[in-house]
Length: 470
Ligand code: UDX
Ligand code: UDX
Ligand code: ADP
Image (cartoon, rainbow, N blue to C red; front, side):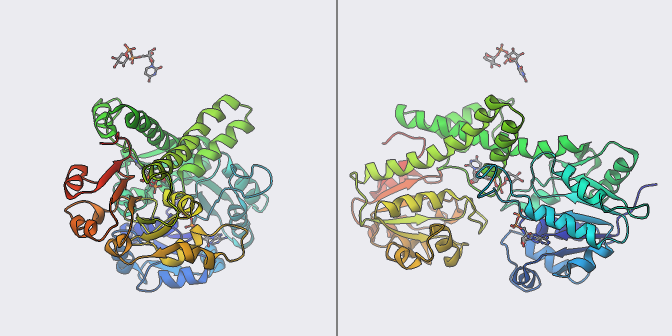
């Protein structure tokens, strides 16, 4: 007989834990789901009218189930005590110092969450690794938990990586391409695996629920993100060739993507990928390869990240070169600061690198993003180690409340995030923008979202990634 999960606890109320568990509560009314976090203000926000993360469709689901079978609390002990199944969905940032600094994941939060479970549990638990972690982390978690188990309490470890993308999280969770559940291939491990399968089977067709061994599951998460990021770096590398030759990257991507063996997705050239996962997971893979004494493999994947840095630098150089080789005291309007549209998240956003480079060149930067807060922008642009350079930054950086305000008196507009509202003729009146800019008025499209012809007819000088100068 399989174990039936009745109470779920999730450690970590972030971008992964919050939406995932909200959707489980929404689809499984017979399961109580409690999401806990050490961060009190984050939990207070989850319990308020203003959720701590912006994600289309999330509000509705949370408001519908909160207080019924979905709870947010800082009471870690109580929630762990009562749960049959615990998701560990805490942060795993890249290590800043020590062994593997800059590459390896910092597993301190995962370890402390695991120890917490071991300390508190008074009955058997299924512990599910949900955070993206290096391959074989489950093994460490298992060692900690097993050292604390006895004949009355056993811990079964599962790996259930999350594949949701920000901005489309709710749809990704409601209609996943697949759900992946890794477990030890022992009778107990497979029983635990089956218990989690049954949770997802409330709404996911069973042929989309894949069960594998623990290590395949862990590696698949890193591999999937590495393969996706690799497609972007591949298309971005080709975009450089297009700019130099007169081929058009959108046409090339379309022509290649029509080959069903290649497929059309994740071939959009850009100013560089961002987000909390791609870079971190590839660097994890690089570190793992080095640890396994596979330097050629490490170098192969590292190149995906290196090309991403190159793409950002290349774009900055194009802006400077076009603006007559100097941007000192020129006003540059930055359209978008989030790492992609429909999210307020800025982690590893290409806009951060671009703005820092423009500031270094003494430009005046005016930023508009529909969802990112002013505090977050200044936090991202501050240099680590400098106690408070906000004051200095404020001489160079201002935040605008609209695209119109950002582009007033500007010498150039740089599109860094593909928000729909920046598209020509959807919302923005580019004639009005053109009229209020310095002339010649430049626009640099780092996301290939603009109709360059229309803008040229207005009078703009348009530069697009992956296209030669017109
Ligand atoms: C290729 C392209 O597929 C085709 O579109 C182009 O016109 C010519 O080059 P071809 O070389 O005939 O065609 O065969 P293909 O099926 O692509 O295989 C090429 C090599 O890759 C073979 O050695 C094949 O064994 C290998 N391969 C292919 C793999 O190792 N793994 C795969 O998943 C696919
Ligand atoms: C990614 C994976 O898609 C998801 O499966 C995993 O769980 C977490 O990491 P996310 O980082 O939220 O999700 O967003 P994604 O849509 O993958 O975009 C990542 C970055 O790549 C963004 O900066 C985006 O703008 C960029 N991108 C994406 C491109 O530049 N071109 C593309 O074609 C697609
Ligand atoms: P992700 O994008 O992976 O969801 P976030 O950083 O958004 O990452 O969220 C991780 C959350 O986990 C943070 O809010 C952090 O406070 C929380 N957290 C870290 N350690 C613990 C722990 N031991 N117990 C509960 N929550 C934790």
